[in-house]
Image (cartoon, rainbow, N blue to C red; front, side):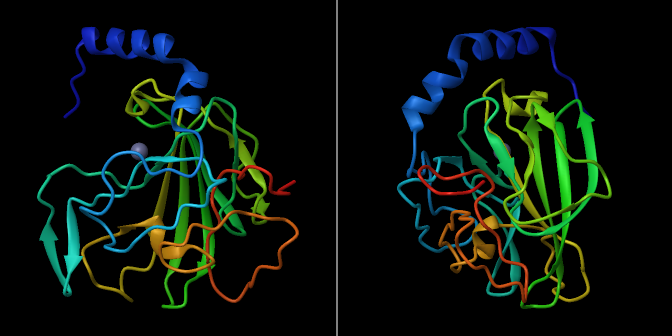
Length: 226
Ligand SMILES: [Zn+2]
């Protein structure tokens, strides 16, 4: 049930106008994980490259696996992806090769693109989702390569809080292989360089194509990506 009082909508709009993209970008910049770090999700250190746009919020499942059993997290707040603090109209790039299966505009989550990929080492298929875009430049049915521009970041949808950022999610498509009650997974599990090792897309680098491994869904500074 969704009830948003008009005052809240007005506040979001005012905050949006007051904060602006640039101040956020300068405040957070690159190479940082702002806010809480290891209270939830994958309990691993995250290596944040110094040239990667900062993360403002990490993945936090309402229920998380612990020793194979689902356990409700203490904070009781759910965040199904990671938030990358990037200014308006930052290129949003595919985390791996795949097929665009959906491009839509929703009231809460704004303009979003969903891409289906191949299988992981564990044998399940994954889908990545990119939220709050200001524009999508791909269409359903398009094949995309790793690092290809899917659209441009923004603050569309109420769930953005009026703050420009990219909300990035990883979904497991095959429930049968890993019967744990979590379908939306921590993106930190899927980087090319390993768990927690955020990996910038670099067009000069040779990436293995054997299984799905992700690169950061926005370009890193001073890296050839286009
Ligand atoms: Zn988010």
